[in-house]
Length: 277
Image (cartoon, rainbow, N blue to C red; front, side):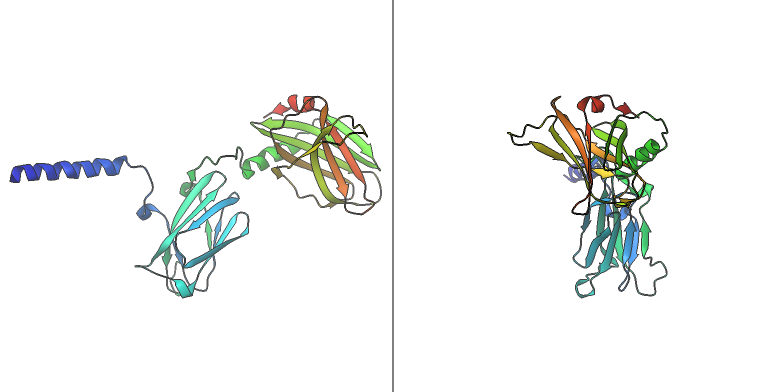
């Protein structure tokens, strides 16, 4: 009987070891330790926008003051510290997940920091549905487009002393990059109200209702504010299709009530002829 018990114990121990090795994952003991103390805000700096955060304890408050910075701080009235361990903070970017052990340190602890850079070796790759390119990748492609000095013009339009030009169209997967330039040939600065992308009929019959579908850019290189002479920017749209009897109207409007408006029509064949990286 004793022999059977010993055999079963050995088999059970081997099973536990094999099972533990077969379960994938990262364990709390393997996470990087980050120390935090009262009165100090700790900032996690991400190389790309943060889209999700989880803090495993109610003793820590957190927010996103800007899109790529997580700020956390101890709530002293509800802190529960067990052997210096506070909890785990999980940060998810556009293409990665990173986790850290939060540990309590005294006010005079020598390793207290107010800033933590999320490093590549601390990131695990993550496939987030709906995101094909990260913001950093889009920026890299957009800057490469700006360096292209070829003079091929896809479409152009003139109105009110303004000239709108679609310089290039590029596609990367399901993302469409539009390279736009606006030139102001007047002496009056142009204050941008908004730039809108709308799919509309080529010919509008006054007797019928105008059908318009607005397409929101998912990313742009520079914020649109105002310009005196030249404004060039890169806009990214998700894959879009429309029939030959419609166009993609790119409409730039000015802030003033009597503001100037210029509309640049783009045909579907211009999208189909887009270059690729």
